[in-house]
Length: 215
Image (tube, rainbow, N blue to C red; front, side):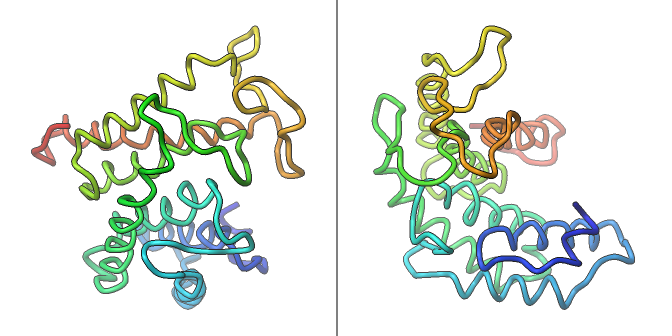
């Protein structure tokens, strides 16, 4: 994946972030494979997809895939580059703060969310956006509010029959259904939902003493 990302043409969509984050890792590790020009051109292309008010588009104007792709990866980039790529990272931060204040209204007080768009089989991956905000120490909403959003959504999902008899996540939404599969889904695809647990990396930082804040 790492070497492939710098040698292929990418569709004008969120996949450009795979190239960006791979090169970001190369940069941080001091690897010769780091291609600054390619990363910059990909970042410019991503920013050209910005619609305003915190929203991005790619091949599909809006669906639930966006927050766990476009906004999620922009937060990851911000986390590692905010002291270097200052102006762009400030834009990314401003945008996710705007987006969070609107996106929250797609969620119910019981924890479910509007089911719309691509890759619904990723299920509680929808919480990865709020988890990433916590990881990056961006208080787009009060931390207690974000904690409640994440936990209520996880509880809602775990009350549904989304696992098979061996305890593996299935393809489907609120229950197993192969009709929810798309051409890029495989048996492991539902585990993109684990992006929702990025907040655990943040908790490790807290316990290491590098950040003094509780949630």
